Amino acid sequence: MDLENGQQVFNELLKNVDSKNSAAFLKWVIQTSEQALKKLTDTTSRSPILDQIRSDLRDTLPLEAVLNTETIIYPNTGDNADCTKTTTIHVDAFLYDDEAIDDLVDAGRLSRNYCKQCGSHQVAALTFISHSMSCTQLQYIFNYMLPNLQNKLLVDVGSRVGPVLYGAYLYSDASRIVGVEMNAEFCHLQQKVIEKYKMEHRVQPPNFLSLPADVVVMNNVFEFFANVEMQKSIQMAAFCRMFKASPYTVIVKASTVGRKLYLLTELLNGWLMPVNRPEMLIAAEYALFDDHNDSDISEIYMYSIL
Image (cartoon, one colour):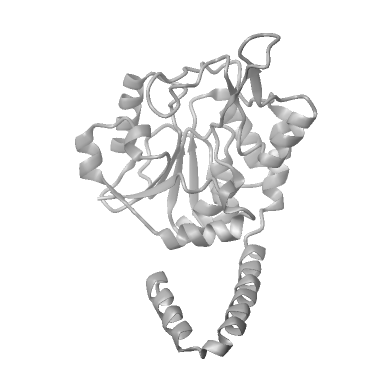
């Protein structure tokens, strides 16, 4: 039974309950649903191995998880055009969740605001930018969006510290997991984690875009690391070289695929079809968040390749 039919059945049932018993019935519904939601939450706990990996990486990387060998290019178009070097802080969402960020602020290691005029009370909020997916986003992708990846090849484009690789290994049954990363330091860091946690039989060393993929994960990829024209070229090459002649899935962390993937309009219209499953998002928000306003999963979209 799908969500719409379930709602119709419930409304019909509610209409048939005697009016003098309506309050008691609704109280029972609330109690029963709370118990069901608790069971749902209990089955989606975060992997302790993932937490240990995060701890290892925090000890290895600088606070902003940006390397000296990287060149950051602040975009002048799109959603992040307001980001500048002086008003933007890079905080890796995989390494630091909201609670960890609060701890850093309390310890004086991180600030949420900057002074617009030294010595005055004119302060403004700093922009926090992450180049990685958070742990809850990983759970959403592999427990809800892509629950069955058996015998599938997953490619993560722009894998950086490797959260998608580790999440795919721990939360999915994907048989082959490949990270594509151009920075040699990040490649070396990923390999150390893969070897330490014995993931080599499924997680492959980072390779260039040469393999056909069943699933491609792209998270804010290239936006802060290449100009717009270069992004077009890279992403066109990625699509053309990784897709084979059967349907795939593309995961894009973006408000719309067109704003983050600077591809030709003809390519988007001819290749991508949005996959909309609102019931999947609702179930995940109940399971993964105490407060649905804290959800960071609604900006992850899934597309099938035509």
